[in-house]
Length: 296
Image (cartoon, rainbow, N blue to C red; front, side, top):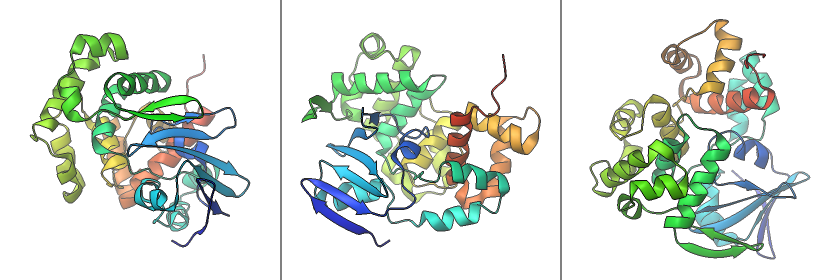
């Protein structure tokens, strides 16, 4: 992909950028460390670096990075080598998805760290996004490494599997507000740290094989495994079914209560290798508009 890039004052500006909107990307359930600022920009940590992202007119401004950092870390992270225009054109053949895409036109799937993503989505099970964000921030503060301040706030890396493998369950539960998931976090961290499951090796495997291996990890079921596959292992055919995706699929495609397994099978057949992209457009559309929510 060719971009009109300007480097200025520790910022990278991409001029007239299409298919990129921070709110759509960071509010569609795929990442939990991006925090919205008063000016509607977003700030987070990835790869040991702090980045702030803001939409200014038709431009996107990446603050606190230079051109080498942008290409070393953020180009891949934001999936900037992919033509989302072609993806949207193909998915828009479905009239329901066409509406969802028009609503969340700036969504991109992030390429996140596999270990951090695994722990994050273990925490996400039967949980709400504000609580998930708080727990991940507390884990980073208590177990990660400080990497300095940005705009007056201190930032920390997400801890390694080696560090979390040594964490005490009761301290995780009490200090990081993860509840019963503390044992899953420690046990999964031990398995990964001991290389009983090597996350980086899963990139090479077909989606179903990688999913079977992930589901051996404590706290990882069908939905969590699909999230890990989609958001960190480049398996774009993965289709996580959470409460919002279940609601929107039932509302538009099934017209009745339907099992998660049946929804996932239908999505695999209907959306194929673009299932993960379809999932993100549908999730954001449903959650922002409350589609399928039962009226009180």
